[in-house]
Length: 316
Image (cartoon, rainbow, N blue to C red; front, side):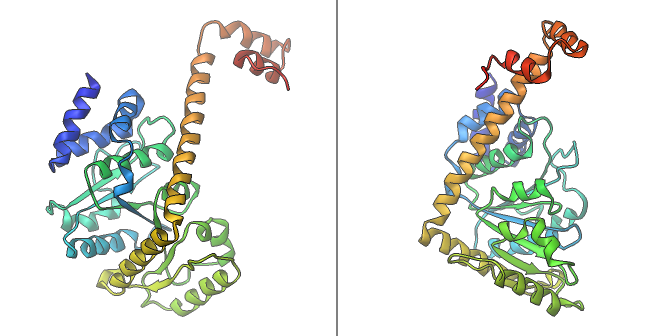
């Protein structure tokens, strides 16, 4: 019954019914069997959509930059979806959270879909919810999907790993380049955007990034550095052109295909781990485990031996 309902919603969403699409994304957020059934319905759709990750420290101007990039896509008469990730919030309900209100001017544009998203029970969390959401949006045939994160922590780095091109947004006076390197920015950045470039320190920031790039090894693509003032629309077209250049590079080199294949295998890894965690939680909640727990607490058995016994593994 759930699958049939999801099929009906998907059909409606493909006919530009945004309410149906929002309901489907809620299924993705909540997780469980309905989300797994939906994934089966849309599996294989992601190849038709280009995904751009936009990340950076809070206050870097990501939302304003995203808003301007939406306009660039719309100028080309293409549709675009934005998934604004808020890993810390248990509630999103499709609302535009915090500074994402800056994207409100596109709210009445039928060619733009904006959704703030947080996991509300999805098995595997955002690491699985985001790829599921991307596939859903691809099935609805959005040519572009922007994934915007709230920061540059480990969760955000994993999220933008679902993107084809990742733009790292920083501001003048961004701090120690070594700290940025530790945050994994070099590993995920396909281009750097120095936003608020009209402020003091922009030249020093560019020099820091250039030095960091010189000390790293790249094959084929070297992340460009683009200066923008997103609030004034300056440099935005150059950012979009860099995204398109990176897309062309990925397609011609074949690296894009390899990246997508690697992401599918990584997603499988997340699914397997999540399923194991779910089954272990069920196992530990069974009444029969009470006696084993008593043995563990009394010292009659050690945790490793009990784990092997519960999982029915044999020592190597």
